[in-house]
Length: 244
Length: 275
Image 1 (spheres, chains in turn blue, purple):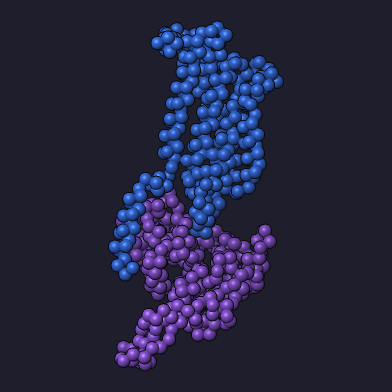
Image 2 (image 1 turned 180 degrees about the vertical axis):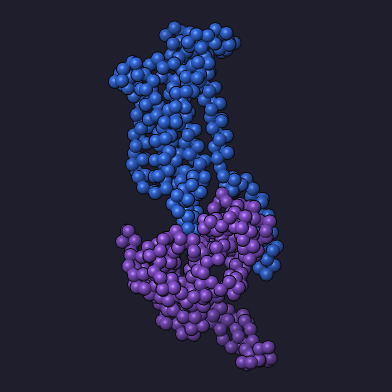
């Protein structure tokens, strides 16, 4: 029992549903910041990543930008932006930070998805007489989708984790009970908040993992699943050509 | 008819893949470009449908330069079969075969109907139509690739080592099928291979190439075997060894032909004695 029991008790206390720091409100804030930030980042990073993947150009630049963006400490950037933009612009400062955080994964997901496609398939599509646009929409996008969804998945999880520490600049979200609880030595509240963040991350990760699986096109999925079918195919071919 | 006129291709990195290449490929015949890897044969093939642009010279189809044509329309009008099939992994067999038909605007139902009949043409069971390429054997995938190349009934069929990646038994089977298809369909086929036996088996005209797509010899298989241009060709086609180094052996029942390993290949008969 002890701390865990106390954390559960804190979580299940009816008082958690009241006031401006009610848990549903904090959860909504947390999810809201995550969704908005990833969407904004996606609008920028995914088309750019697709362009890089399709043309094969600008890869070095993208890697450099993504690497630099990954190296920036999010918390430091957040505090810096709050100081620069002023305390009235905390949400904007936070969203900018989260967007920068989400861009590398989304960019990488978009271009590696296209890069990972067998060159012979793209070459064949072009040789069949597909336009560049048709190659993208009919071949590269569907075949690159699983890795893109993988990129979205890691971007979302990074942002969920970072929104937690943004409670330090009074942004709200599920980090708030943690940040507020530490100086008060309210460890039931700290652990309760931490459990909620962990649960949110796990649930979202699970959903996106399912989405990633669903994004694998049918013909590519059977590839790994049905070795016996392949052997059966070879057998039926041997049977069909007695001359061989 | 396809004509190469002093075609040169220098790649961006400075490699000269093709140097001043000229050749006429007769219509309704199979021309095989054969040479070791890196000799520029695939580059030549891909210049016909503008997958590679020449840096000098011209390629003409029936007297019209391909360089003046829209590459997308040109490619849709020319069948293309490649090594390892190049099938779309996320399309069913039927959709793969119907790809070009759908691109040129054939309604789905008609395209699928035509694709089904093509599966039959290349000797595939119609039950495979709804499978995905990954569920087929290598030989079946190549057959689908051939069906796809033929789908829009092109006059020209480009084949880039189409049977290079399958095992010898399946390859022999596909080659026989190819001979049958060509007899029925009468396309202008350009076939690239590094296998001289395949070249002699399928080609009406065989072009032996050396580095930089230098033409060493052009001729029918018989012409080349009977009169190799130089020692390079003689060594390349192996007239002095193996299956092609035949000699006559007297037996009690007449003369037979024996190969270099001493295996009897057949009997020597008088002209006109074949019934």
